[in-house]
Amino acid sequence: CKRLLDHQRETVKGLQQRLTDVDNRNIQSSSEIEKNKEEADGLKQEVSTLQQLVRQNDNEIQGLQYDLDSSKTQSKQVNQEIKSLQDTHLQKQQEINALELQIEQVKNKIEELKRDLITDENKIRENIEEVRTKAKKTELEVKAREEEIKNIKTTYLKLERMYRMLETTTD
Image 1 (cartoon, one colour):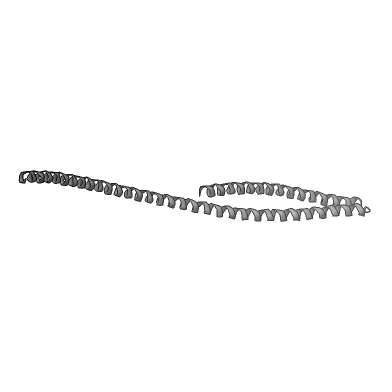
Image 2 (image 1 turned 60 degrees about the vertical axis):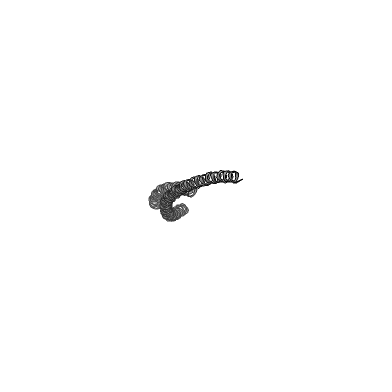
């Protein structure tokens, strides 16, 4: 459980770093969009001025129009990239939420296992106490039996002496 928890923590740290990287790229992309918009505005102004001043130079105007179209295409591409990054961000946030839920479940399982361990320890203590009580009882029974055997031996020896004394007196 601890290894799984450590692994999940490392995964969360990695995802958080990736999320930070995505946010940084989002900020950078927003700045590029603004630059492209400003550049497009400047080019439009320049085209308008050149059309008023030099209408005969159509080739130059066509070149500027091409640059303007290229900037719009780049702007669309940047917007698509931003959308993709936002989707990725949302997906990563969902993954983080799922990992946080898993971490909470693991914590709950650990708590449950701790409670089970305490219960098992208490049962083991009770069993040990029962075994000790039984051992003391058995020890007392053994001592009582040994005492009984000792008394029987003593009685036997007395009877044997008495029997010998009777034998010697009857002879």
